[in-house]
Every structure is written in C-alpha cells, then in structure tokens.
Amino acid sequence: MRKCVPFILLACLAVAGCWQSRARPYRDAIGVQPFAAGPVTTTDRDGRVAHYMLRKIERGRYRLTPSDHGRDFGQGFELGLFPLPGAPSHVLILQMAMLSFHTGDDSLRYYGLLVVTGKNTAREIVPRCGKDARAARMSGVTKDGAGICTFPDRASLEKSLLALWKSGKKPETFLRLEPAIGSPR
Image 1 (tube, rainbow, N blue to C red):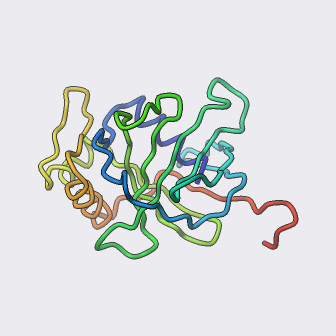
Image 2: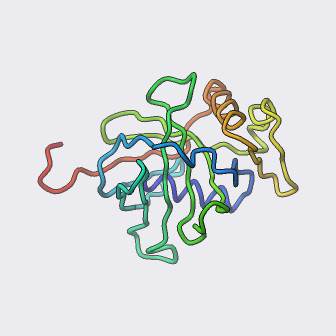
C-alpha cells in the first residue's frame, strides 16, 4: 500500500487530473486499518518498484514514507481508508494528504480507490479527471483549468468513486506488505 500511494500521488500531481477536496469530507470519520504496519513494496503497470514504510497513527490513519533513498526520502503521506457505500467491503476509499504540505484543515486531500486483494496485498485505482470525467460529472464536480476535479462534499465524492468502481477501470498500482521479521506469513 505504501508504494502505491506515493506513485499515484506523484503521478497525479505530475499529469494533473487528480480528484481532490479541501473540504475534508472524512474529518470526523475513523478510518479502517486492514493492514499491519511494516514495509510496503509497490509495482506500477510499467514494472517500476518502490519501497515504503507504513505506520499506524491516530484516528485509524496511516503514515506512509518512502524508504528508497532519493529526492523524496523522508517525505510521506497521511493515508485514510474508508468504506465506500454501495461497493463490496474490499473496495475502500483512499484519501491521501502530503505530509510536507499538511497544515491542517486547508490541506488538499487526494482520492482514489484501494481494492484489498488479500491479507497483505491491494491494488490502487487512480481516477483522472479528464479520462474519468463522466463519473466525476455525475455528481456536479467542478473541473479547473489544470484538469483537476474538485469535490464539494462527501456525498458527491462517494457517488463519483462508486461510479468509477462500477466502470471497471483497471488498477494502476499493485501493493504488497512484507511481513515483519519473526511474524508468520
């Protein structure tokens, strides 16, 4: 899961077209934590691999930090995972906030879907405002000049994410959590 999130967020920021919100629709929600803390490996569709550390934090959230040395080493994301109403229980809303820009209520939150495929595995579906605009427009979402879709509230975000799930969009990133040393596989 850790590896997926940074790739997705970085790709989203690089090509624009993200789904985002400043409204903090899950401010009072407690997230679900289907995964234990530990090392995470992500692989994108092009076979690029990245490594992260996943740590549980308060309110059912995670902190994901890159463990590969490079320009993003030590930065990271706050992750929240929430059930998506109307979707199967293994399909979760993925909310990400960059820690380096995390300044409280005004921080942008980026959204996608995380499909839990096993005890230690998941796949990430990244919405793109341009490509997935039909799902986004269903809920009256605004699209700015940079191609970023912004959701005014939780209901419109969830409606769009459910439409995205039902569209059959394929995952872009595959995540694998590595068991901690000494724990059973």
